Every structure is written in structure tokens, then in C-alpha cells.
Image (cartoon, rainbow, N blue to C red; front, side, top):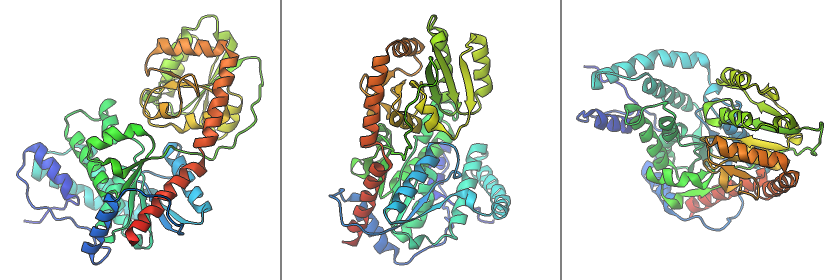
Length: 444
């Protein structure tokens, strides 16, 4: 009988346990990309358990930044990668970015035609069924890994994965390479999808994705996290505190002098129009503020699957002062005219839009999601409300509309905090320090 192909034995073990299948041997087909793997594995193990020390001597490095998602695109991850690349290059390092959409789509389609039937057959024969989400994920993982074989990974001093899937792919190659492999999660993938019903709790998809997250953590030499809010969920998946370093996102923001173009107070919400950003809560809050709406104009910047529903909500609530601006490439200019920046998100990590608003000097009103409260301190650098609490949102929004002195104080404090802590130089300098330390530890 022909041996069926499945490239990730550790995922099969997790699925076998879920389905109650007695484990059978699985052959992982991945080309060895190095020799003397035992020595390199020992070096990797040493660097993983070694505590971070003081700032080592500077060395020009060759760095690979990789992600499973297409790049460039609109969103925080793409901005983060660009900022990190440009910041590292400004320090004299060589930086490459490798992403799936760089590879030949003709070759990708050929691989797809081969792998999808094999994956379906494997799942049907082993478990009696398969799910489309897992087939799609396995296909994308396999194809990206095959494409990555054409990359000379051995030439890089540092490998830096920006998601759990890439951390798995690079981790498998790195079993032989023994390079320092960093992993920066930009969200808790499985937890978020269960929370928002994109996958069912207790389902085979939850088991599958959680195993990928666990393996990404295991493969990582060190993890750079965007906020302390990642610590507990990552620890529950096996991460050790010594291997976690919190570095808040910094940006290269072109501050434009604040201007006043009308007598009205300008409220801006800059975010993708998706269910977790809380736009509907903002519109409901605005509808409760009788007597103040004539004082303000509201700008919704961004686009997404909820735009039509939100436009219908605006019409239903008769909010004549709300405008949808769509995606824009002049965010600094928009923020320079913004008095109050509102992001009523119900699930987030550390949104770039809040950091941009802090740099701009706008007064910020947002929620205590993810790592937001690590930079937006209530009544100091902004106002914090509970996610989904429309009443609180309306009350605090009305307060800011009626109190110019408070707006100016919060905006000024936020601007100063951003200049001190949330710049490209601050972020990249800390990440480069980790790179240098790991290289120095491996050379000892």
C-alpha cells in the first residue's frame, strides 16, 4: 500500500489523540539543510535557556524577516515589518523579507494540485473525514515550506518569524541550521478565533491550531511580544518567562502641526471595518448624546466587510454628522485635524492607530483590550472604558466634547509618551539588542 504523505508528524499526533486513533508512524518529508545537526541543536538549546544579558558589542547582521501572510498589505503587521526592516537597515544590517506572494503563482498552483488530493486522502483514510479549514492550512503550510527550500537560509545570522505558521516552517529547517529563531506573535490565533466563533471550542480545528501555536513556541529561541497581555496566554501554551521580552511597537510617524479647520470638534475612528473594532458601539454611543452631536463631525476611516451594515446603522440612527472616508494614505493629516480619536475595540492587542493618534497629540478614548492600557493610562494619556459598554463610551465621549482643557492635557501627555517610548528607534534598538545578545551567546 502506498505510504500517504503528511508533512507535520506533531500535528498528526495531536489529531490522533483527538480522534482516538492509535498512532502510526509518519514520515516527515523535508530536505535537510545542514550537517552536524546534533551540535547545532545543542547550541540552540543553550541559547534558549540563557538569560538575556547586558548590551553586547555591535555586529552587522544578516536578518531574515518572514511571515505567512501576504506583504505588503493594509494593517498593523505590514506596518510593523516595514518599520522593523527600515530601522534595522538604518543601523547597517542586511535585512530580507520573505513572504508567500513573492513566489511563482504557477509553481504554487502545481504544488496545490498535487498536495490537496493527498491531504484529503490522508485524512479520510486515517480519520474518516476532513475539514476544509485544516486542509487549507496544511496546503498553505506545505506550499510555503516548499517555496522556502529555494531560499539559502544558512546565509542569515537571525531568523525572525512574524506568525505561528512561519515559526513552524522555519523551526523545522532550523532543526539542522541551529540559527537564533525569534518569534513575534501579533495575536493569539486560536483564542481569538474561538472567542469570535470562527472555530468552535473543543473542535478538531482548535486542537490543530493550538498544536501549531505550541510548536511555534517550542521552536523559538526567543519571543518578542508586543505587550505584557501576551504573557499569560503564551505561558499556558508552554512559553517560559525567560524567553519572553516585551517591546511595545514603535513607529516612524511624521507629525503634522495641529490645525483647526472648522468650529466643530472632529472625532476620528481609524480602523478596519470589522466586527472586533467596535464601530457599532461608537455609533450607538453617538445616538445617545442628544444636544451635543451638532457640535461634532465624525470621520470613520478604513474599509472592510462591515461597511454596508455600518452605513445602514448610521442611516437608521439618523447620524447626519458621520462620514465614511474609506481607506486613506494621509492618516497623519487626518489626525492633525482630529480633536478626539476613538477606538472602541472589543478585541485587540496594541493597535497601530492608537500609537499614531498618540504621536499626533489627539485626545484618545479607547478600551482596556490587550496591551492598550500599557500605553494609554486612564486620565493621563487617554480615557479608558470597558469594551462593549456603550453607556460608558457615551458618557466619556460627552465629557471630552465638553472639556477642551481635558482634551489638550490628554493629547499633550500622549504625544510626549509616544515621543519617549513609541518610536521606531526605541523599538528597533531593543530588538537589535536581543539579536546581538543571541549571536554573542551562540559564539561563546
